[in-house]
Amino acid sequence: MANEFISFGTLPPILVINGTVSRSVESTLEPCHTSKRITNISHWVSAFIIFISVYSEKVANQAAQLMKYCNVVRDLDSKRGGGGGVVISISTMSNFAI
Image (cartoon, rainbow, N blue to C red; front, side, top):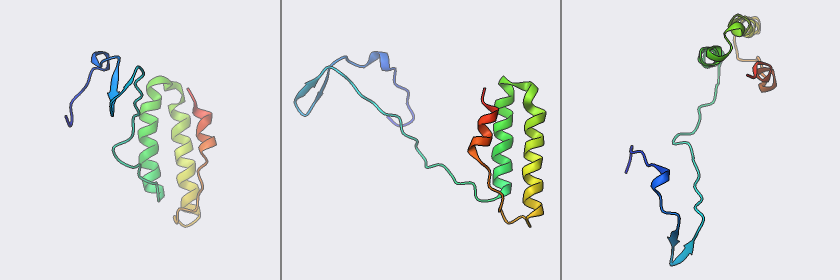
């Protein structure tokens, strides 16, 4: 059943596992691949541009602010020699919450 969709509405309300009848069904969603770590400024800028393109669909008036933030981070990295010494806080990103 790889790469097929299942309509959860068609699943039976009763599930039998190892001879035991269960009236509740639990399921979990897990990622297929582990997420990649951002290891340098180039990867961060690429990821941030994708974030901006998605985020600006909802809040277009903040696109310029986000681009300026991206430029500030790039400038900080270049002033530190481009060695990836800039720490980007996730809490800073929460300032852009929708």
